[in-house]
Amino acid sequence: MRFPFSREINMRTQIVAGNWKMNNDLAQTQALISDLKKQVQTSNAEVMIAPAFTNLYSAFEALRHTNIEVVAQNMHFAESGAYTGEVSAKMLQSIGIKTVILGHSERRAYFGETDELLAKKVDAALANNMRIIFCFGEELADRKSGNHESVVESQIKKALFHLEYSAFNNIILAYEPVWAIGTGETASPEQAQEMHAFIRKTLADKYGEEVANSVSILYGGSVKPANAKEIFSNPDVDGGLIGGAALNAEDFFAIVNAFNRI
Ligand code: 13P
Image (cartoon, rainbow, N blue to C red; front, side):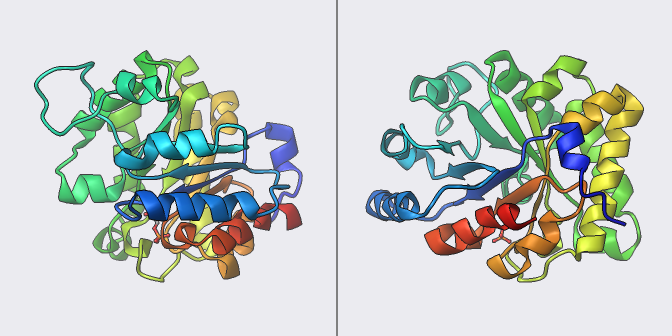
């Protein structure tokens, strides 16, 4: 069932964010940004890109007077100190970055990030007035065994449910089923809507309808120009977190512009 006016009523922000992951050196970053700036930006959606740490400052400067926000892919929870190889919220803020992606499944799988660690990172980002794109999602085995909802519920509860209501002004959720990331396999629009509605209900049960309806919930996992419109037209899908297709300016803006035709 479709609810075409739900976005207007809830006033949730529509967001399309490109997670560049560990792709693009400085020259490639500058070239892709220059391509992005050539695209017409008439979308209803907020647009973000997340380049690698080494290119954040250059990207931020290059996009300073545009409506594309530059965001970070990760940060450490500590303010400063003996954490070799890490970057703090204050460091990000010092170069103008206001939003950070936390909890991406690649951070969880390859760098051992647990729900408990993520709760600390969430606290640190919020303490520094940063906005968070908080990622979570089940693995294929969870989906096959029918545990996908309980896995997602547990990820959300463990990292976020210690927070006050007001924290959700600065939280964007991103449901990224692990089996759909970089695989070319996307959750069907029905699977995405069903999970997004479940996530919103989980939030509503704890924080009430008003908070639940104000939080943007993005879908991530093999979103492409060809499937974006169908995924975004679901009432509880407020945008996308885009990997591979964000590395090409035309594809990325075709996805961003999918909102204009809904
Ligand atoms: P793909 O769009 O390449 O599947 O990646 C999704 C993702 O992980 C975004 O964070």
